[in-house]
Image 1 (tube, rainbow, N blue to C red):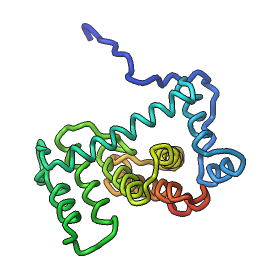
Image 2 (cartoon, rainbow, N blue to C red):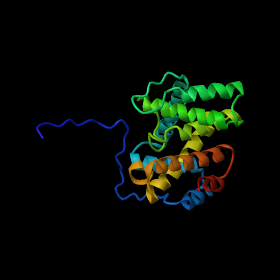
Image 3 (cartoon, rainbow, N blue to C red):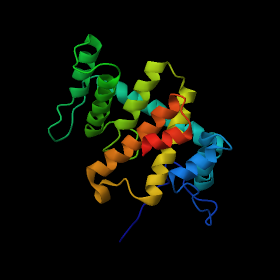
Image 4 (spheres, one colour):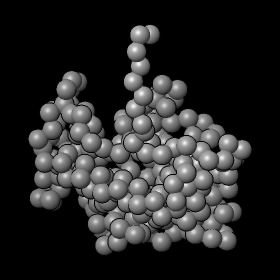
Length: 219
């Protein structure tokens, strides 16, 4: 090696406490924690301990993630994505959403809207657009599609959606601590399965469910 370039991380991930042991290894841990305090606040503090950020800054970062989700869905639904390779045309999400708006899909309710949004984010990812890996880039469409569709249907505020995102993150943390959401380890079904568990828990929590009910949804 003749030379090396050191690049500072975009976000702080320096664990200030090297002896810190993650406290959320099972869904039962999340449920138990929620019995005495807000699970969203507890998970924000957990990330603050891990990253060195303040709990407020962690929530700000999550709000930024939510905003990127809004933007990635909107950009993907434009139908103007140009995938670099593969068999994805780049406008499947757009065409399905147009069918949804016209009321000409076989299924009804928010299901076709959620599927269209998920496709749209996947197409944006394949075109090298900006997405939120939730938990991976390959499964990036699932969580925003479900959460934003539920939020639209119920008229939920961003604060409610943020709390639901923290719940989803908690489920992702459990998966990371006890199994894996890596496609290299569990295959594509491991990625999408993890994202689906996270999305299911977020949807139930956003709807007003308890952490116990959200855990059952994830399972």
